[in-house]
Image 1 (spheres, rainbow over the protein chains, first blue to last red):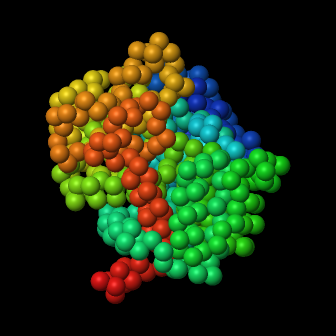
Image 2 (image 1 turned 180 degrees about the vertical axis):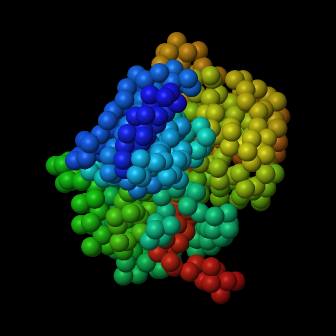
Length: 152
Length: 312
Ligand SMILES: [Zn+2]
C-alpha cells in the first residue's frame, strides 16, 4: 500500500474500505454491494498504482458495515479483495473475502435453455471449486467457470 | 429430496437404486397391481415425446390409477405466457403426482420446489431423464445377472447424449470399465472423464469402433449420431457410418454381450442385428414400463418391498 492510500484509508472515520480490487472489476464490486442505493458518502478509486496488481481500485464507504454474506459476494468476481473495517480512524478488522458454498441471485446462468432464464425466479448455484471458482447451476446443472460468470 | 420428487438419478442413493431394481423385477412378474387405486396422475408434456408418455401412462394404467394432462404445450396455457410455476400450482390442486417433460433444463427441479405433490422428471431438455437410466440399469442387471465388474462400451454421441452421462454416473458404484468410442466432435466431455479418474474407474477412449473394443465388451451401448450436432458437416459425412453396428461385427464378441440403444435408432444398428440374440434394445424399451411403475410407487411412498416379501 502506498503512503497516499494509507492516508486515504485513514481519512475514513467509520466504515468499510474494500481494497485490492482489480481495476476493471471496480464497477462490478459497486453493483454487488448495492452502492447505488446507499445514502452515505462513497469514494471510488480507479486506476490507482499497485505493486501487486499493476492498477487497482479501492472503495471507501462511510458509516456502512456490510453483512459478511454481502461482502463474500465479491469473491464471485474478485476472490482476492481485502476488506478493512474502520472504527474511529483505525482498522479494527481486516480480512479477505471468501466464496460462499451457495449463491442465490446475483449471478445469471449462462445456459439460455435454463429454466432460470425463462421464468421469473431466483437463480441458485452451488460452488463446486472455491479455488478455481467453478459454480454449478442448481437447476440445469451446468458448470460455469470463473471467466464465464455473468452477473445479473 | 423435496416432497419425494425424482428429478435426477443422483437423487437416489446406491441402496435406493438397488431396491428399485428389485421392485422392477417384481413388476415384470406382476405388471398389473392396483396400487394406484383412487389416485390421479398428471402427465404434463410441455415438449411432445410420444414414446415416453405412452410408457408412463401405461405404467399408471397398469397400476390402476387415472390420468389427466396434455401431450403438447402448444394447446395449453403455457403457450399463452403462463409461467411454469402457475401451471404447477394449478395442477397440483387436482392430482397426487405430476409426471412432466419440458424443453427447458432445470424445469423439473424448479417444479419440485413449488409443487405440493411429487414430481417425476420425464426429461428436461438436455439435462436429466432418470427413468431412462433406471431402465438401462435394469437391462444390464437382467442380462448380466450383476452390475459389478462389467465392461461397458459407449458408442456414438458421447458429448450431448445425456443417457450415457447418467448411466456412467449410476454405474460408478459398481466397478465398471468403460470404452468411449466417438469422433472428436462428439467425444465424452472432460468432466465425466475427471469423474472416472476421481472414482478410480478405468476407461479407454478411441475413435475406432474396433474388434478389440467390441470383443471385450459385456454391454455395447449405442447412441444416435445426429447431423445437427456437427458444426463441420464434412466431419459428419466422414464419421456417420463409422459408428454403425452390423451383425458381422459381433462374430467374435462375448456370448454374454448385449446391445443396448435408448431408441429411436436411425442407422446406428443395422436391421440384420435385430435377430441376433445379443440384440436387446426392444426388450430394453419394454423394461421402461417396469422402471416407471417402480419409480411412481417409490415417489408416492408405496411400499413395494413388503409386497414382494409377502408374496415370496
Ligand atoms: Zn442453469
